[in-house]
Length: 155
Image 1 (tube, rainbow, N blue to C red):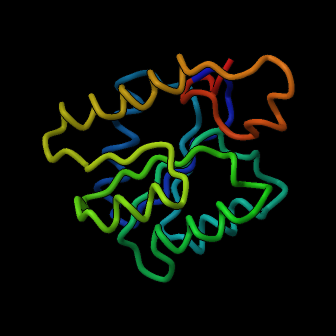
Image 2: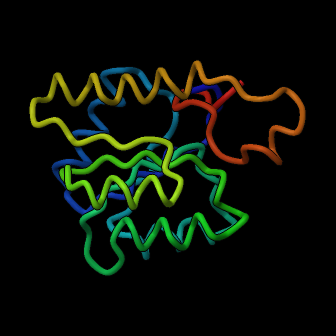
């Protein structure tokens, strides 16, 4: 990604969180990875002015307290966070989850690969997309206050 803002990982499974962290390390993604375990904790992170706004949110759907769909409903309705790109990274391939996620304006939906090499390739694809994605040169903060890549969000 193109800047140093954090990537927010919202994931209740510690093994999956460690796998994402390992993939970031193996791919030399320079952005800090901030891990929270549910939607409530993710909202608390976003609301805390002491934290930098994440450039990207990687979101699991099936979590306790507040699931990913509930989190999306809140964040995408709030002008402070609605432009932060969210990529769903989940085990669910249910059509209803995919449809509802895109209805709530996710930037992408990836079913977690079981094999580590395939998982790394999925993270590589996310990073590459947000590294190469074009955004307007003027008014970037108004247009996309979120990430423009993983290692350096946007241009």
